[in-house]
Image (tube, rainbow, N blue to C red; front, side, top):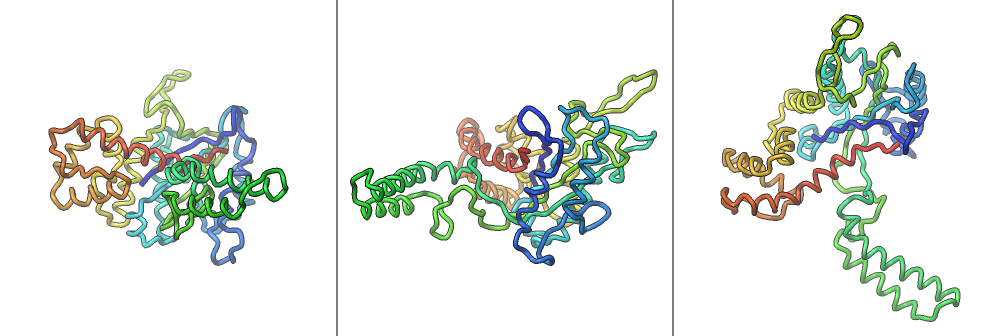
Length: 344
């Protein structure tokens, strides 16, 4: 489960409205019947219109400065294994989202009217998406890029020949284009993968728009706070502050496991990802110390994530060789995290 929290942002300043982001999230509903659409939902209802989302988020910004985000985007990105456990069920995804937002509220080290923050203080709207498209940052796009560039040049030559500005053999150039399409390393059903093409497989994930202000529009609740959990003296009174992202990510993961009786392998855990980034030697040693069945599952998962080196055959004491091999995974993890960026 990859979970990201991203502030609303556009260049050096913040947009005044959530409308563009809502429009972006409605793209999957275009051309679908009402029963096939995925509407917005929150802790109180399942069928919330985009107009209501825009109105409620845009009108809940009292006393926020121009340079402060009016909302945040949280994305819940279940793995293929987790989606298989859910059988890609939209209702199960909604149930999980509601539980995650309870965890989100509890991760604030804040009080409102001397009471801990609960999900009822949070103004949020969530939406399930079942598709993803290839972006320019994806490995498949980048590795197909040289072939695509040559194809564009050849097509341009063909147009120049047709207009009489260039002399050449159109048929030969068309044949060269077909050859490049065949040689491109990444395809879906024989078609060269290009930017904007829908990704194969189950791609369900959840976008959550969270207002910066609480339901009363009086208190600012920022998950981007630089404080994890601390207390400060203000006007002679001890005030709690901060948001603990580590606690949020860990507890959201535990919530999924408990809610759906999911047996999580070590390499799927938030703890493992942190160890992988900070202490790759310890990451490898922990995997090698797993029970045989769990270790086999771990390496199977790593293989599907893009690790080609057979780590199981590398002795534990060959740490440097292992580190070199598992560095390949960092790009994959980074791309998964980038998928949560709203960019608006």
